[in-house]
Amino acid sequence: MKNNPYQPLNAEIVDIIDESALIKTFVVTPDETFRFRTGQFVELTLPGEGEAPFTPSSSPADTEKMEFTIMKAGSVTSLLHNCDKGQKVGIRGPFGNGYPLDDFAGKDVYIVGGGVGLAPIRSLFLSLLDRIKDFNSVVCRFGAKTPKDFIYKDSLFGPWQKLDGVDMKLTADEADSNWEYNVGLVTNILSEDDVDIKNAVVVVCGPPIMMKFVTFQLVEFGFPDSAIYLSMEKNMSCGIGKCGHCMIGKYYVCKDGPVFTYDQIKAYPNIWD
Amino acid sequence: METVFISKLKPFLEEISKKSDLYIPVKKAEHWTFNRYNPDEIDEVEFNSIRTCLPVKEFSFPPRELAAAFPEPLEAKQIKPFAVFGLKECDLHSIEILDKVFYEGEFQDPFYIARREKMFIISGDCTQAGQSCFCNLFGGKGFADLGFDLNVSKIKDGFIITEGSQKGKRFIGDNPDLFADAPDTLLAQRDENRARVKKELEEKNADLKFTSKISEIIQGSQDSDVFDIEAQNCIECQACTRVCPTCHCFYLYDTKKPDYFAKMKMWDSCMRMAYAGVAGGANPRKVLGDRIKHRLLHKFVYFLERYGIDMCVGCGRCVDADAGGIDIREVLKKLDEEKKQKKTNQAEIAK
Image (cartoon, rainbow over all chains, first blue to last red; front, side, top):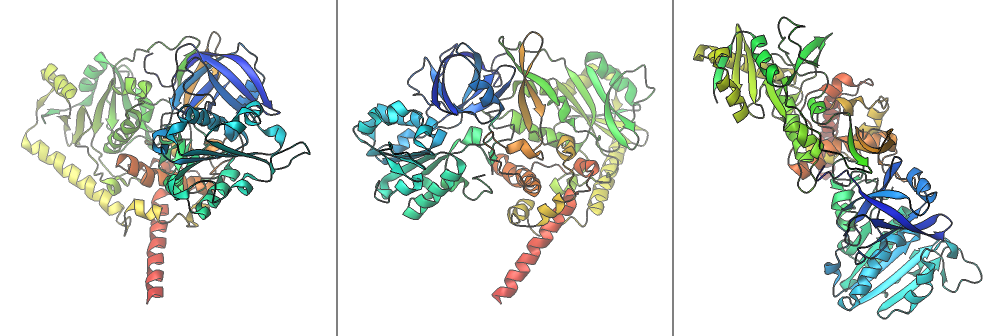
């Protein structure tokens, strides 16, 4: 059937990369060219089992394959973690708005991420690198529970530390003696002097509790609510603004989001839960 | 709009049923329900006084359907034309609301649209105000002006049929033997009935008069205890959302069929605990009172902001179905009363 938004495109898992104890990156090749904007999400189906929403962690410039970095958290993700290369899957989408990169041009881009929240951020980061001259600066503040819980270790602890135009700081809530970066929550490594608050946008993605306290701290620093971009994790299902599961107030996260500025959603109840 | 007269329903409906499947209202205990029409089973079709017990959304948005298949995509299913007789004004209003959702812009729902476009709508005037009817709160009056192919008005010795679409007009034109002229005296009878039902509705709901718009009442009462108090009576049966003709939440799930994998689309309910939960454990509406509040916010605030129309038609089905005794009319009254009280208190403090 043509134009059936519930019909996934057939795809295959061609590689699986272990990131941490609970997180793996799945490299997926769709049967047809699949384009998305960074920050948009797709519904990944394990045929016969279930479907869940994920934002690709790969660059949209790569139209041959996509990567999804997935934490084992629920039924579908647990089954995915048991899959091997060659597993057939389905993808629907892309859905939602994504990050408005053109609006970021000429500004300091301040990226605060935590845990598996680095997955969408990696896609954003790679997209920013492709046109790094368009931005005043790219300032990253990433955190994880322990050094082992960081994903993309090879990039983060290596080449991403030495990129021109990128200021990167890492922190672990708890560290061992080999850890050469900061220790403590990600809020501890945020500073009012990191970027020019009057000419900056902030992108926040991580567990709800981290996003909540980071947002409060950013507001205290003086960032306008409209400059704080939040990637909201809700129960997106249909992807097309109909089934109702992902509503935040009048918004469907799947259609109007998943990226919202804080001023759009702050008046609605229980946004961090 | 052309109007014609018939003395009996059966020949008219029998003609309809020759060209398409037909569903008619049948009385079961004190309720009306839709049944497939079989001319051999009944002598005469009854004219339903009020709307049916179950919502009409089932015809275009079935409780469960196949939405996708693997590895081969679904073939487009041919939907046969079908007709439904006995829809009321509130039902047409609910179809208008669902159309907004499923026909919306970029992502239309092909399954809804396929059925909707094959549906021939024969509505009927209400002949009384039902126990729980409060459609007048949303501009309802017991008869429809728009949204039907044909409309039937019961009068003393027969029925007035009004055309409402090209399809309806064509049906009348194609069957001249079925219809007689409707003289002004009969139209006057129809109008009298309509005025009587409208008045009945207004009298019945005379106490449903609010000092502010419903959207403002709900919007302004987000910190009210009323939702948690109502939740004490709610047994989470979800019947309110199932019988609601405008509730359209659904759930996509995957399953294995003998020779393919299927993605199914099934009615869901925002009153269900896990409805908004995510795999990580977060859930913005773990508390039942918050779910009741969200449902009303969606119906009267969010939907209105998005589509410019309330997502409630005042059919009262949820009132009839509610096992815990929650009555949306009473909830609105309580919230309005609280709002008034708040205003008075503020005014006194200001003094």
